[in-house]
Every structure is written in structure tokens, then in C-alpha cells.
Image 1: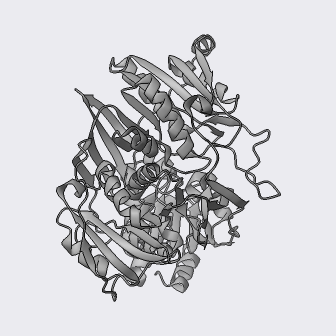
Image 2: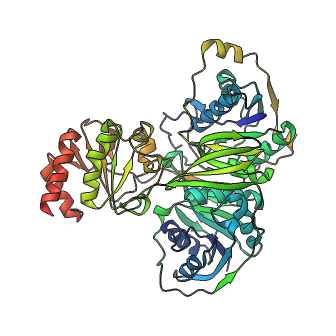
Length: 314
Length: 248
């Protein structure tokens, strides 16, 4: 049976959700081994060993692996790949940064952002902003794959008890160093794992109006907040709110699009949502062609009333 | 410092792709083609670094068919100094493109390579990282800000939760995200001037690269189509529907 190495994204304590989806994809290819690389990451290693369906967990604890710098982590992975048949990473910003570096070092053509496993070396993946789904078959001896988190169910995070093995890599490659991170802290759920998302578009006018209109509705529903590229480019919200081809890919149970016309690149990031609800005053907006529920209305009137009505019913 | 800017000719971002009836790919006959938007941002950034006096020369490179010359002329009109076309009619995968670019980097010895984080046709998001690996150099992917400090490059990256900054030893590879800059439009005089700028034509074999694909496309199909649902007349009906969905 082939052995699959999955790179685990973690914060030294807990495992990120996207990794659990990558584990599910990997388990459809072969026996799953995990790599937890970090600095002071023993707790994350322990958490990884409890994921259901894991045969082994490698833990590489070194300051050089603290911030998932691709220059340092890729050689560690390449070393472990001498006894693995495939490398799998979640298609998160870190996964997308590291995996192609591994692929090139292994002389393998990576298969990005897979949606399904169709055979031992056959996968589907989105191209052209999700407008064309390609089925591809690899002829490489080893595989390097990134996994779209919304396309696979998450592996159960507890119930397993895989053995943990410490591994040592070559550490700091001396090419790059981490300077700082500006990570927005929010009480709201994370976009990529939220059950409900309220997203706003350019029609929200400015940053203050966006906040005053979108945030109360999101908080009433316990939802995450997202935005179209137009709203992010206009500076209404920071870049990490962006949903679309080049932003985040989401598939919540309920997606509420407000003042979003529905450009192709936005739809690419949310069209796999369970129920799509759209509120926009332009009844010809493309978003209504894919929305399950559409309300043609002035959002500045409809959204506050919606928020108010929902609050009253609570 | 010399900057190398790889650019790709792709379907124009405003065009909705149509899948060929036989399911072998996307129909690109008579479709408007343009420079990949992320690569336009890369060209702009390189030119700005030259205008700031950080870079001395900007060399645009493309791997593709003869018509990719047009894409390179666009880069020259924006302000690149010269161009190299590695001409091939075959579809070249990111790994092979990275190998060709490695060959060019060996010859040109750039201090910096800037390219788009992803092409909007294959959506692979690989070439920059692969090139950095083959060169044995650091990578600043998904850049929203680039600053040169002595022998280092400070790159602000767009990551899942916000921003992250890294310090890279030069030479380095940077891939651009959307908000790095707003690319300029080439002026008519510059478009005319670009026609006489040097454009060298090479082939993948000049760099000893085998471009045979590693991935076989079994088929290309339409994604499942979402049907339009219903329109609700007012907020109260919408609230009732939300209740049915269990979210309110």
C-alpha cells in the first residue's frame, strides 16, 4: 500500500481544519502519515496523533520550522519523501507556498487544489476559476498534491492513537527569516470553516457603511464575514476577507451575498455553498442566476430590517 | 540589479471560457487573449523598482507560442527593456516552465525574479515556488509589498489570516498578489517605442528542457450547474425561509 505524507498546519497546539480535509483526501490514496513541523509543537504532535485513520506522526521540533518558511520546511519534507509515495498539503496559503517547492525538488509536477480522488494517480481539479473541471492523471513516480478544503469532509479529530516519531531535518537553510505577522483577531468564526457567511460587495459604499450594515447581521446569525474583491480593493475590509478565485474558497451551509453582483471570479470562491441567498437592487445581477433565494431590494433598507427582524425573533 | 519578469499569455480575464464539445479542453479559437493579470502586476513592480533606482534592467520572458510576442510587447510598452520568447506550440506545465526559467536565470543572473502568483487559466500557483527551489533561492509568495534593504528583500505576504512579512536573501523570487500595485496602461508613444526594443527568440531545447507533460488530461468538463432558485418578495418572507433553513 502506498504511503502518503501529509503536512499538518497547526498553531503549536491545535490542528487547522483544512488539514483534516487533506487527511481525508490522503486516506483515499493510501496509508496516511502526518508531519508536524514547528517550534515547541509537541502538543500539536499529540493532537495530530489523535486524528482518526493515521498510521504514524512525525514531529520535527526546531526553531527553524517555527513559521513554516518554505525554504526550511521543504528540504525536511523531501528527506521524508524517500520512503513515501505521495506528499499532500492543504491548499491554504502555507500549503500553497510549500508544496510546489517540494514538487520541484522531487522533479514532480504538482496537482493543485484537487476536488476528488478518482484513481491511484487520477484526480479532478478546477481550472479557469472553476469554470472547467479537469480530470488529470499523473505519470510521475511520486505525487505532490494540494487539497481544496471544501471538497472533502473533515477527518474526525479525536479517537485515533497513532505512534509519534521525532525526526530531525537540516534546519535553517539560511535563505529567509520571518519578520512579523499581522493576523486579524476576530470573535467571529473563521471564513473557511464557518457554517454561515455574510459577504458584502462594492455596493456597500465605504468601510464604515460596510461595518454598520454587514457586521450586525453577521453577529445576529453567528456568521463569518466575507467580501468580494471589489469591496477589498476599495478598502472596505482587509484582504483576508476576500472570497473568490484568488481569495478564499468557501462552502458554508448558508451564504448570504449582499450588494455583490456576482463576477465570475467571485462565484468561483462560493458557488459550492449549500444555500445561496442574494440581496441586490439590480434584478439582472448574475448572482441571482445561482442564488437559491433572491431578494431584489435596496440593501440599505432591506439588510437593517432583516437584522432587526431576526433579532426580535430571538 | 537586473530583474527577470516571466509573463504568460492567457485567456482575457473578462472572457467566460467555453469547454470544447469533445471534452479535451477549453476552446481558445478566436478568443481574446491577454497578459495574465498577476503578471501585469509583476511587470509594474519591476518597472517601479527600476524607476526607484533599485533595478538597472527589466527583462521580460515568456514561454509560449509565437503570439506570446504580443504579450512581451505589452511588457516592453509598459517599460521593460528587452524580452526573451521561448517559443513552443506545446502546452508547457509549470515544472517545465520553471526549468526553462532556471536556464534563463543561469544566463542572465538576475538579482530578482518577479512573477504572478497564479495564471488564471490553469490556476496552478506553482511556477514561482518551483523556480525558487530549482535556483536554491528564497521565495516571497503572494506579495502585497516589496522593499529592498541592503542585500535583502523585505516582502509583505498576503496569508490566510492577514499579513506576514519575511526577509529574503538576494537573489530571490517574488510572486505577486492582487494588491501589490495597480499596473499602468502603456501610452501610445511607448507602444510605438516597444516595437523596436530587442526581443530574442529561443526554444526549450536551448535550455535542455524536456517539456513533455507529466500530467495527462483525461477530460475537461463543466462544473455542476446551479439552478437559479426563487425570488422572495420581501424581508419577512426571507426571514421565514431562513427559519426553515435553521439559521434564524
